[in-house]
Length: 230
Image (cartoon, rainbow, N blue to C red; front, side, top):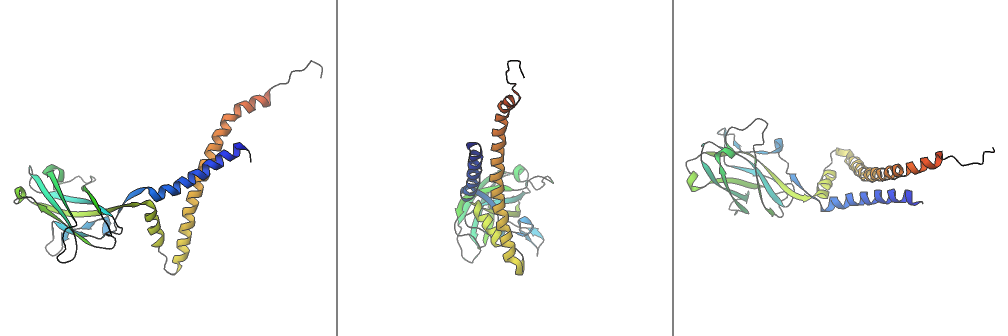
């Protein structure tokens, strides 16, 4: 095999291999499953939003919350403590976080298409998959008379990308045909890796071909010198 063909092939194989390796080391934020994409904290019995709610991580290393906080005392500065504890009687906090926010940052009136959430990160909670945690917002001493509510919340884990892909394949729908669906997904993912490598190799081959064309064109159209006798 000539070098001109070997180099694009090697680049394509290397690119596909790097894509697979990246999936094992690259970590992504994965939002835990919840109705509507977030957990509502409304008390349906009293039809009011309260200061606490539940989250149920799908993955280990639960390490992020997005809180839709609503402040109803303009001009106040809110000193808030966020408690995260297992949803079992007598459980202690696994994480305790502190926030210092002006009312303007968590006002009760928010833009229609704006992001209403405040992101809070903390040390990962190991073995969090499949468990339920209660998240509770406690105002500080200076805010005892100020009103603040937690309208909704979202929870996340930061995990390697391959775990997300694995969960996607393992939880494939299909009922009795689930095995066929899983096989189709695996083939689709394999095809994605292969096509990425192939595309990269074609780009390299095209680049190499373009750089070599001018010289070839000159050789092809070069007129040989003669002595005038045909």
